[in-house]
Image (cartoon, rainbow, N blue to C red):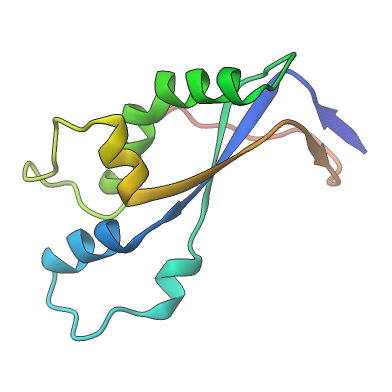
Length: 114
C-alpha cells in the first residue's frame, strides 16, 4: 500500500442551492435524492499542521476553482455564475479536509490535465 503524502484532500458535496441551480438548467421533473450523495475529491496542498485556521486558508485559496469545476462538470454554459464568493461556496457545497490518502491499488496513478 502507498500513502499519498504530498497532498491533502477536500471532499466536496452538493447542497440544496447547487442542486436547485442544476435543475433550473434542465427539464428534470424531480430532484433525485442520489444527487445529494454525489461527492468529488480534490487534491490540495498538504498541510503539515492542519489546524482549523490553516485548513480554512487552503479552502479559501482553491474554492473558486472547485466551484467552477463542479458547475462545469454538469454544464458548459456561459450562464454559469462567474462571480462567486466564499460565502456562496459554503452555501452551495459542503466540504471536509482529509489529510492522508492510502492507495490500495497496484501500479501508477493516472492523471489528466483539465
